[in-house]
Image (cartoon, rainbow, N blue to C red; front, side, top):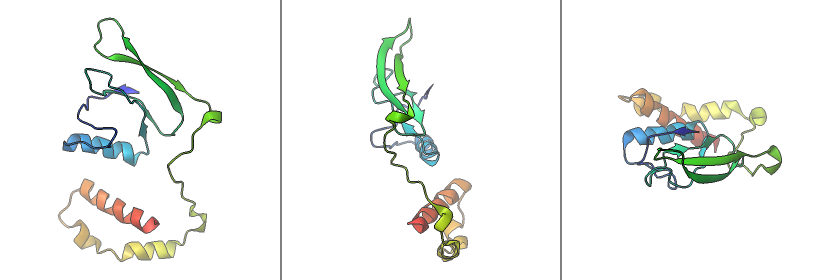
Length: 137
C-alpha cells in the first residue's frame, strides 16, 4: 500500500496519457501486480493504492474518512486467508513439457538486428517481450 502521485491514471481502463504514468502501469503489469483500490482517496483522484500479487488476497476495501487535518481518506482493508482465495486470472506456465527447440526456432525467425535497430533499452524490451509472449501462444 502506498501514496502514489499518479492522478492521471485511469485504473478501470489501465491507461494513462503521460509517458511517466504509462511506464508506471507497465511496471505494475510486468510485475504481475493488481491494484484493488476502487474509489478516489484524495480530491477525486485515486492516489492511495493497494497493490497485490494475488487476486483475492486483499478484500473489504473501504474508505473511512480523513484522519486529523489530512486531505486523504483512510483506506481500510483485510488480508484474506487462503481459504477465501479467488480464482487467479494469471496463467502459470508449465515448462516441464516445453519443446525449447521449437521455442528457440520461433524466436530465431525474428530479424532482431532490424527489429531493435536504433531503439533504447525500454523499447527493445517491449519488442522482445511481445515476441516472447506471442511465441508462448
